[in-house]
Length: 188
Ligand code: HEC
Image 1 (cartoon, rainbow, N blue to C red):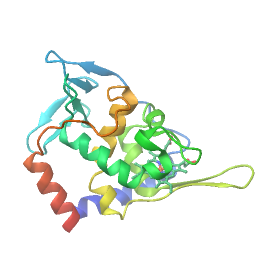
Image 2: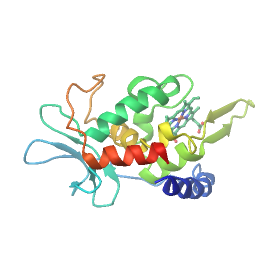
Image 3: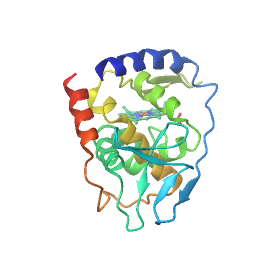
Image 4: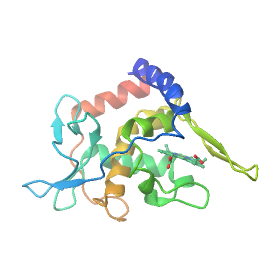
């Protein structure tokens, strides 16, 4: 797991440099399935081996049941977002005077672009000389070990599938695979 993140941050460093000019567009479409669940995009399936919901594209996604129960990963994302990101990006992704509203950013940022910016950071210099700095979190296990959840949480908020409700009232049980992956990543 550690090796994976190290490799990923190294790639992301390269990707990070080309990010500003060209973000790839992704669909913000959320679909309601027969059982009333809301998922992002089409063909979402639960991967038992990873304990995560994935789209056909391979990007992780959320699953919210009609009664508001969120998948475990997305719940984790809510927690980690409010531990690591909200001081700058505002509660529930709504933005602040200092940093952009990520619920808007995720309408256009792809999953891999999102991972790239968070791992590598980004500094933009405005014409008045002021710097806008997104720190690099590539070495921060408290972010990187939970980044898929932070992504699916923000994506659910961005798609309008999860309202500004604070902590989701109910969540699916923690899949064994998620617990194991978190421990391995944090220990690694
Ligand atoms: C110290 C403040 C700070 C913290 C903490 C922070 N960010 Fe940022 N972030 C920024 C700023 C400022 C920008 C805008 C950079 C720019 O001008 O391009 C930004 C940009 C971003 C972008 C790109 C948005 C876009 O529209 O292209 C993403 C994605 C992002 N941050 C995610 C996160 C996540 C996820 C976390 C928590 C793990 C986080 N940030 C924590 C300050 C912060």
